[in-house]
Amino acid sequence: MQRPPKPVAVISDTDMLPTFDARDLVQDGAQARIVLDGQTYFLRITRAGKLILTK
Image 1 (spheres, rainbow, N blue to C red):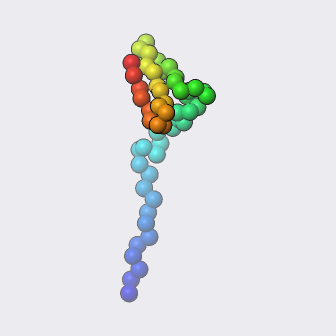
Image 2: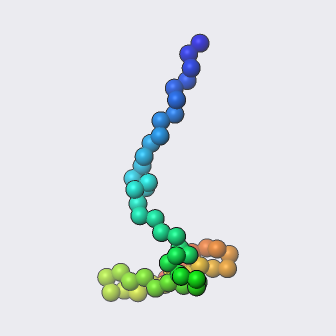
Image 3: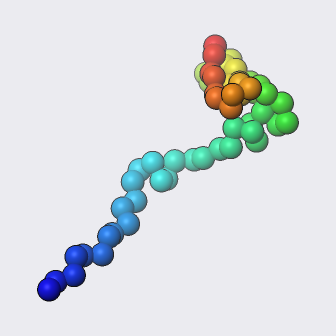
């Protein structure tokens, strides 16, 4: 009886993306301002622990 092959770890492109903790971005608050190409966006953590990004 043959053994099944061992699983092989697959590294995807998403494993190499920069990762940030949202709570670090808001620094003890509930909102952070993010600027992209001169446009300001607001990142907000809701009471339910969801993220909302608005312009």
